[in-house]
Image (tube, rainbow, N blue to C red; front, side):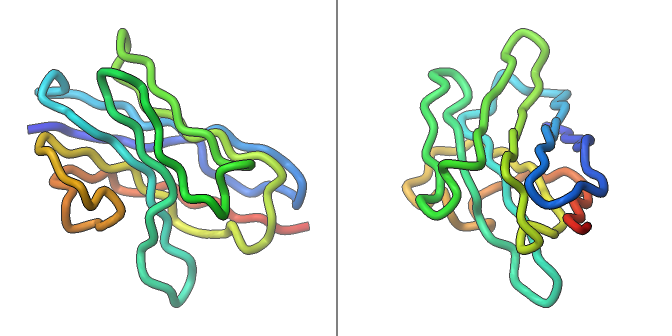
Length: 125
């Protein structure tokens, strides 16, 4: 089992930046892949970006790859999401997720067994 706890969300002005953190605990050595998702008001949960835990190789959504950067600290078992040039459309509840299984469909929420509780990001002037 893996436990995930997000932090770092908040209210930010358009054009600002945030770094979200996701602290992992438990059987982190079993994690193969981690990811960030978000759920905007009235929308379904959507995948943003993913990282292979051991290699650090990333696969970001093309539409946001210039502004969203995923990384991880394997020594401290922390996953990060750096968000730059924030826009009002980025307002959402952001979730980190992890899986201990190999999957080709890393964009699907159903392929992640472990989830954090979410951290709210609100972009507003």
